[in-house]
Length: 83
Image 1 (cartoon, rainbow, N blue to C red):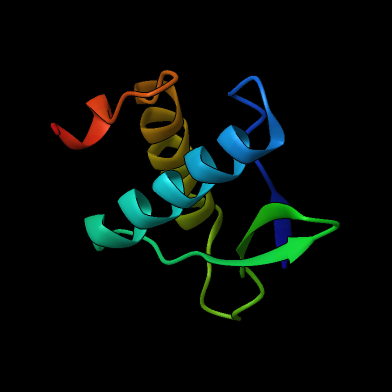
Image 2 (image 1 turned 30 degrees about the horizontal axis):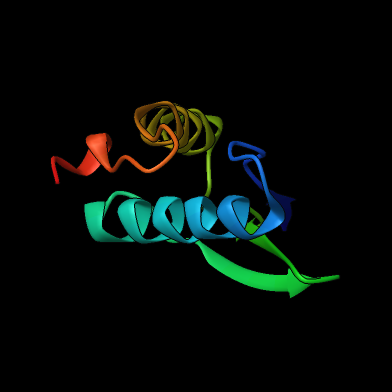
């Protein structure tokens, strides 16, 4: 299990909102599935990569997807989802 979070946003509340948007965008894409937890009032994203059938290629494709989606979000924007 890999845990991570985006630190985009000026406040913890805005960072939490952006992390929820990233979570939803990834899951809505159908190309990967993330879950989340709240740790010390911060949204933390989780990606399970421990399945025996998970390959390095799966991990790299998911990393690229995450990067593309996260970079598409600027403060107050949902550019990566086209809305």
